[in-house]
Image 1 (cartoon, rainbow, N blue to C red):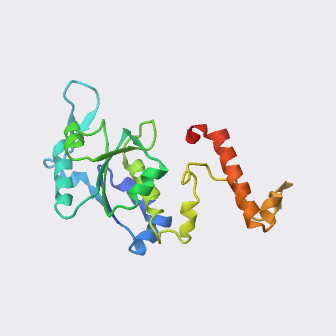
Image 2 (image 1 turned 60 degrees about the vertical axis):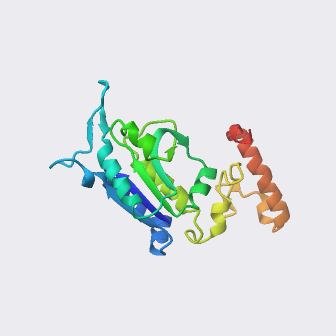
Image 3 (image 1 turned 120 degrees about the horizontal axis):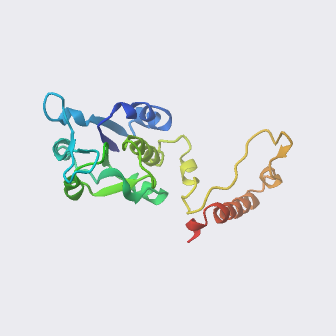
Length: 224
């Protein structure tokens, strides 16, 4: 998989995308991540990428030209299944969406900044818009990191234990059951006896019951 990230502040992406599972996936050649500075496509000596918005509203708007030039240059080189704009008013990211995106070969992630991007880009170049929640960030870079991490960990070979990602929360529309590790007793708090029984069938049943109960108690909306 190849992920190209277009950003006005590319330095914000460096650390999150160079550690842990993402770093190992890159080293294995499972994924290629390219961070592209939109200022390289900016206007004039100062590489300007923003301007005042029509209508007199407060805040600066990312101009269409630099974004258009960056995206058309990329799409002239390869086919992209998704050209994604990260925006608070996009479709909320969830696990089924991440599963779908993880099957793509090439993805562009466009990070918004300032007040946002010229709407004509959204109308003509973007084919998917994603939000990571109903709140506003200073820019789309953190959202891009979230989306990238969510996708990459699902790609076969990215994680040492490939089954681990398949048992995460939300994969079966339920929260994960409680998990425990050694010691068996800590501070007087004990691990449930069923997990120490060695009876895999009963353990599985207990985990399913706990997953349903936790979902019912904490996220009943998922059961709808």
